[in-house]
Length: 363
Ligand SMILES: Cc1cc2nc3c(=O)[nH]c(=O)nc-3n(C[C@H](O)[C@H](O)[C@H](O)COP(=O)(O)OP(=O)(O)OC[C@H]3O[C@@H](n4cnc5c(N)ncnc54)[C@H](O)[C@@H]3O)c2cc1C
Image 1 (cartoon, rainbow, N blue to C red):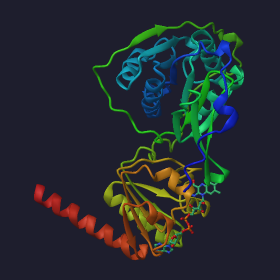
Image 2 (cartoon, protein in one colour; image 1 turned 90 degrees about the vertical axis):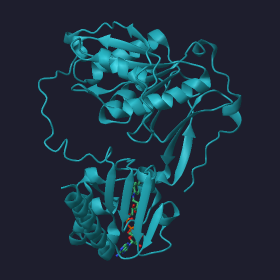
Image 3 (tube, rainbow, N blue to C red; image 1 turned 180 degrees about the vertical axis):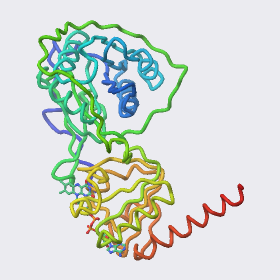
Image 4 (spheres, helix red, strand yellow; image 1 turned 30 degrees about the horizontal axis):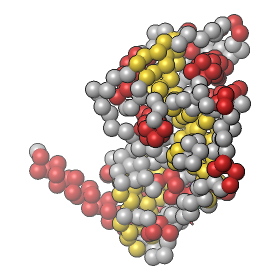
């Protein structure tokens, strides 16, 4: 995999930031929450923001927006524990439940008021929607779905790296002439920082002028998606994934069997999803989910770069493939050259026997 194509040459390196933009300082993270829960990607982003801010000698701020009765103070305490120095809090009835218009207005107004240098959001449904409209309103640059964030030493600009050309190359994008510099990052791309409950920070109450009558979209009701909590691939500790090498949906059942015994989630490569063997939310990779489990078992998956980018952060990758030259063996920690249709049932049998043994001993 090519993970270079990073450093800009020539003009970018000699670029002088316009004088009026030099006042922009600090790294912001939009803290996304919904129905009383902060999305973990916000804490992952705080870890990244801390690194960037330390390089710049700047502060990290979380931005919390919600209704007056929401637990924003609790979320601010969590944000400090995960690395924020301060939290900007906007409490307004119009911000209860996400709607693009009031959130865009509020975040845009805060940016004008406090002038942060960098603003990071999760590449979630909400984050993608908000980041695009805020960047457009502010007329600044936004790099979406980044896999790496750094500070370019020459320009002190945010160097935001993301896949390009169908995932076969990485490019690094810098916003040199505009501020703030904005980026979104998918859940699990960055690791979760260590929580330090002794850390505290500053709470900044920010009022924003929002008039409900001027907001076109109305939130009438919340209807949860029935399958919303059934697939938790992104944050699973163990994933057993299958690819096209399994040949047919009957053989794919061997992946489900092993996953059941291990208490794991089922993952899949894109062709398997396209063939309709599993639901789309189980796809791992560039156009699927990014995962970071403790154990990832890949059976009959070649290890194409578009799959690799979604799972290479796993602590332990076990690959089963008949082809000893399959690309997945270049980055798997344990490689088994063999037929998945024989190895998967053997693993299921052994793990089941091991678990039964332990249960009997404990009884
Ligand atoms: C823009 C773009 C986005 C994409 N996004 C994604 C994505 O998000 N996720 C994704 O997965 N792909 C994605 N792809 C597709 C990707 O390029 C590959 O085509 C895909 O990952 C291949 O899936 P596979 O490994 O299951 O199938 P194959 O490439 O067909 O590989 C099957 C493997 O199984 C092995 N095999 C065969 N028989 C057996 C057996 N009996 N036992 C064990 N092993 C066996 C073979 O040796 C082979 O290595 C994307 C492509 C593009 C262009």
